[in-house]
Length: 193
Length: 334
Ligand SMILES: Cc1cc2nc3c(=O)[nH]c(=O)nc-3n(C[C@H](O)[C@H](O)[C@H](O)COP(=O)(O)OP(=O)(O)OC[C@H]3O[C@@H](n4cnc5c(N)ncnc54)[C@H](O)[C@@H]3O)c2cc1C
Ligand code: SF4
Ligand code: FES
Ligand code: FES
Image (cartoon, rainbow over all chains, first blue to last red):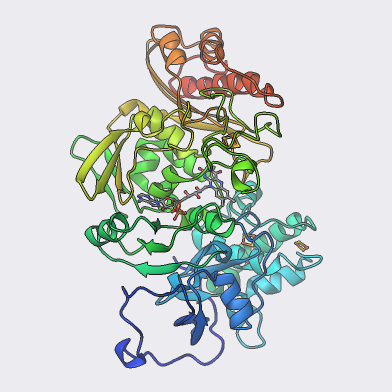
């Protein structure tokens, strides 16, 4: 029941860990910066970070993958929502080093080239944003929500989307977008079941 | 954020040895409290030891009909587990009314019991706070204390315990399983959370290097109709202003047994023993619920801004009792 995304970028061939020269899984690292490997949207990147660097900052500041946004930086807004091993999490309270060996999916991983993910299409169709700052997080939650199966009615959608705050209060339109994907065959097929 | 080192471990013995043998190390589970505390410099470890790979996340049946919830079980996984939903709806409801879907995917049960208070003065290292800096005073006492506690407070600390699931688990008399450098032991749930008294910095009986490996929930047939009611400033993704966990055994309209936890109003997950005593043997009717709630809050101490909680907690408890009583075919809301 993991949400599914299209993978962008070149998918790194899977090389055994030793061959990649990754240190043993239990080696102590830091406090200085160390090379770690992060797999984002199917591509494995080598990135130099200190253990204190959040996944959010590693994505935005080090890897220049800036779709994921920083709102509160304390787990309270959802702007930084990404998936780690297919589960939606907040990347501001996730350490980048803790994500080595895990699969990270960001909003950039949703579209298939120029073809939008059905949820992105539905957000456009339903005018589900104003400033757009919360939108990447809303999308990552909304696609995960389809897989989690909490889309029965508006009350259930609102409850399970409550981890994503929208200062522009686009909530009714976000719910419409989610209903659109829920109610279309395409949504069921590609929305991540 | 200050700098720190990082180490990932994959078995319980190594985790305990690594933290137990180094005063500067701390466990890192879901990180939803720990990374927050690191960032605001309330936590200042030399190193974090990542325990997410430890094999203590399972949810298992106990032979007597109870459940053993792994210390690393995620809030979302526990809430969704069919046995938890069926036997202890109060636990599922408390979990699903806590934090957000994203945070529940990260946060573990062990971490939940160890989470820090949300008092804004505790979080601000420039403010006086006896919990963070013993002897420095309590800025909340004459400060903005609308969300603070009215039960179990002392002149040294009035911070509310923030956990929801702990309120349900205290009503169920859960048992905390702990493993540490000195071996394994268990602690009764109510004993896990001390009152602040003169030592608000002492928040739990866990010694350095000790790990919560599991939480055992004893069998309780009455818990199948249990309920958690949470009242807050907004409908979702917010801590409780008042909450109630209720388990009732009703026989021919008379309450044979009541187990009640209160949240959002006390310095620890509050076992409402006075209300329980008042209810036992009483008819399952609103008048008895109101008397019991009044008995529990009789000793409440309001601070400047939170006196409304004394009424709110009573109403919350009465409504939760009505809901559970009506599920028993009692008069409840009738
Ligand atoms: C925005 C926000 C809203 C929230 N809302 C709610 C809410 O409504 N209700 C609610 O109940 N909670 C709420 N929380 C708190 C959340 O539930 C806790 O942060 C979470 O449960 C902590 O678990 P964790 O696995 O992330 O712990 P971590 O952050 O990894 O660890 C917390 C502490 O526990 C220690 N620790 C972790 N695991 C163990 C273990 N097994 N044994 C011993 N020590 C351990 C760590 O060293 C650390 O000191 C909220 C949090 C945030 C950020
Ligand atoms: S209420 Fe407790 S946590 Fe808050 S400032 Fe006072 S001592 Fe610190
Ligand atoms: S930036 Fe992570 S939740 Fe707000
Ligand atoms: S669209 Fe502006 S914050 Fe949501």
